[in-house]
Length: 99
Image (cartoon, rainbow, N blue to C red; front, top):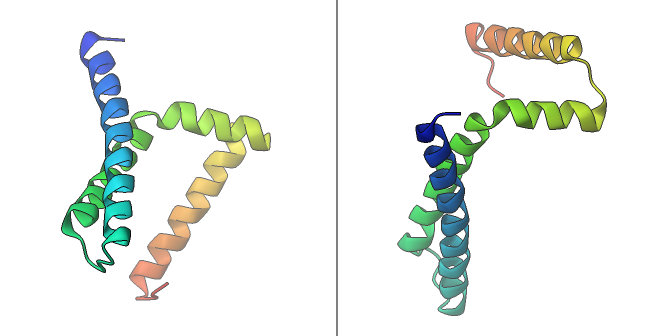
């Protein structure tokens, strides 16, 4: 793995943990002050969601291997399920079906 990818993964992991801590702390502060909308908590939560998504995309191969191992699913089954899901999404979007 290149130095860039190692640094990227390390930065992503540290950022993910840091955002989780800040989101928890700002949520706790908002709860203690009885604030229904607290911008630092809102923006930290959005950033946490985005970084978690990027983290999942960056580690998708390891993640799918772990899921397959846990549920003992073959690669062929995963590909078939993926194609079926894409066909359902495509058909529902073409026909204007909302889910």
